[in-house]
Image (tube, rainbow, N blue to C red; front, side, top):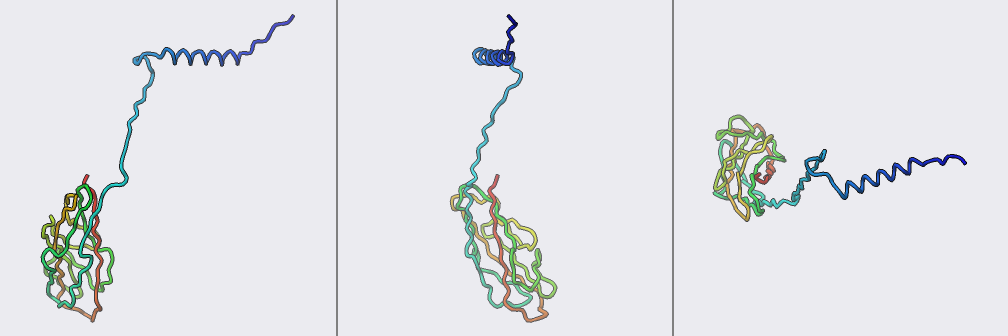
Length: 180
């Protein structure tokens, strides 16, 4: 009779199962655990309720003279926040078919072929010059639920033209960001 060979792999599997069952039935106390994990549930709503409306969406100053300024009627433009949270809004020139040069921050335009657009506070919180390369604040903390603010626009023209320009137009973009 010979010796029987013992299959150690089966013994190891039975040992591991026994330890697992023992640990599950009799877990160690909290102060003896080597590590612990905490789960933090993070939630967010990607469908933020940000709705701003601006009207009118165009304005034609008509024929203008050089070295003058022309204003829309008081409170001609309105912006409404129809969302639920407060927003800050900015304005910037985003497209143009203007052969003239936009000048900012000057009530008196010097130099030929130049113009400026100034947003003058009605009930908006800031008077802003329209910029060609950066945004300017139009409103700060405009409340939700249909809160409306108004402004007028003033067009300033330089002293002279060096050529006969066709009708000029500029696109302005108003952008709203939720106040955090």
